Structures are given as C-alpha cells and as structure tokens.
Length: 388
Image 1 (tube, rainbow, N blue to C red):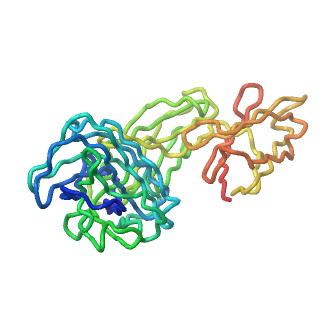
Image 2 (image 1 turned 45 degrees about the vertical axis):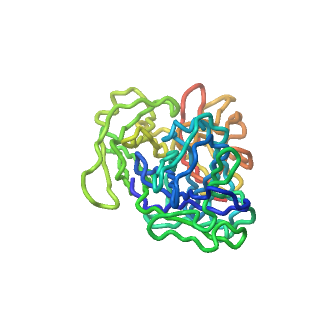
Image 3 (image 1 turned 180 degrees about the horizontal axis):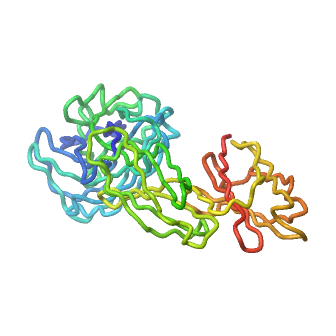
C-alpha cells in the first residue's frame, strides 16, 4: 500500500572528542516497502578492531502522519557485531511536531572494524500501521527542530571510545550537517525517499441484495498488498475465511473492489458479519471494520441516538421486539476486529430508554458495533461512531 515516506537518521551528540573518529550513519532500503536499513561507513580512515560498547540511532517523522506508525527492529543485518538486542524507545514527547524513536544497542561480543569507505548495514526497522491521510511525501528532520534533550543521536563507540565524526554525522545525497554534533545547535539529517506505509482503507460496506450479500471496499497505497481475504461470522466474534480477491494490477492510487456472497439465506442465520483482511507480500495484514447484513428484519424500531456519540447514547428497544415478560439483555461493544471492549447487562424493564455511558477506558474514537442479545440470540447489531 503506497505511502511516500522520507526517513532520516537524525543525529546529535554531546560526547567529547576522541581518537579514530571516522564513522557516519545513513539509510538504505529494506527488504519490504515499509522498512529501512541503518548503515554506517568509515569516511577518512580504517577503524581499529574492537567490540562495540554503545550503538545508538534515531528515526523521526512528522506527527501529521495519522495514525501514528509503530516502529520495530525486525532484523540484525550485521550479526558479527553480536549486539543482538536493540531497544526502541518512543521519545516523541521530546520533539513536538514529530514522532521520534531512539534505537539503542550495546555490549557486543565480537570485534568489529571498518576498512576505508566500507559500509556496514546494522539493522532493519519497519514502520507498521498505515496512515489514514491521502498519499503524501514527508520529511524526517533532526532534534534541533523541536527537541529538548540529546537523547536522539547517532553514536557508536568501540571499547568506550567514540568513533563518530561529530562534524559530519550523516552521509548520502542531500545530507545535512550543520555544526553537527554540538547540542543544541547542531543539525544533522539524511532523508530516504519512497518508503511505503501499509494499506489505507478508504471505505467498506456490506448490503443485502436479493438472496446475496454484496461487499464493497476501496483502498489506497496498495503497492505492497498481495491479496484480500473475505471473512464471515454468524456471531460477530468468530470469523472464518470463505473467499479471496487478488489486488488489481494497475497504477491507480485508489482502487475499489466488490465481492458477492451468494445464497446467504441458506446459512440459517438471522445476522451475518463481514470483514476484509488485506495481506501484504511480507505477510503483514490489516482488517476493515465489521459490517452486518440482516436476513430477517424483525427488529424495526430499535434505535440509538445521538450517533455519532461523545460520552454516551440512548438505546431504545420497543417492547414488541422483546415480547412479554422480564428478560435480560446483554450489550456487547465490539471494536473493528470483533473484540469486545466493553459489555453490560440490562433488563427489558429499562430497555425502551436506556442510557449507555461510554466514558470508560478502552472505548476510544472510532467505529464500534453494538450487539444486542436476548435469550442467547442476537436481536440486532448497530453501528456506533465515537467522536470526542
């Protein structure tokens, strides 16, 4: 799914001058469209062999990207360093206007050295969770553009001795090294273009047409997508795959799809739940929200208001829908992937005008499905949109 993203190895250091300061950092493309590899080279002279004692990188993107991507180290490309474990820390609070990640590793066990102008790729990091904004190009800049500490740096030491070139921390076409390495005025950055973030769902719907259910969805940025898998459930919780569609092989930024589930009346269910799973070439996947198709319309009059919802909503279930006698009614609030994030039980005595308070942890902005269950059967599933 195509989203142009510029990544930069953002660097600032406050360490003292030391011998053998020859190393610079940069980025190159990773094994997938939404990943990059961090690399280091020796610029002026070879380095002496030694065990890496401290290794630090930083990546940054603007906070206008929504939702916020999740960054993780997915591979160590240079196992001969035997650093092995890298800690990813979100330091966005230190850089207003940007999402910033600090990547730290230390205490290697194998001697490492560089020949003159030799490059070594260290780790591959991946940006997961796609934005909901239209395709755009963004740039990653360094901590002086808003940061308050020297935590986000490129720094590498061997046997406790700094190896970085403080005046030229980064390299590559368009690299910026302005009094680099001198916090807080230093500015060092390198941007890598054409990094893609995963699929952006633009819309998904499911409607009953004659004896069939027709599913339609639209997407953007699907360059890395492999296939769409269609899933169905009779209870809104347990889904199973029953169909698939390959992505369209064209150059459009946005595409629309349609899939028909035929003869749904033979499934012996009053309500069917649908969602679509998109699977990338590297096995990553995301889901649409859940949509329902009702086969028997015997719940006329069940209402929710207001909707969209801020702090709560009123649920109205007419007595003719529930029938005679006092009954227990279970209300399940499901998120986009069918997980119950909140639930409560009421009686039919209050069901005609019940206030459902959603000022509770776990119910965030977004779309939810409210299951209304009586006598073990789902009476209706209503879409609830939370907008605070």
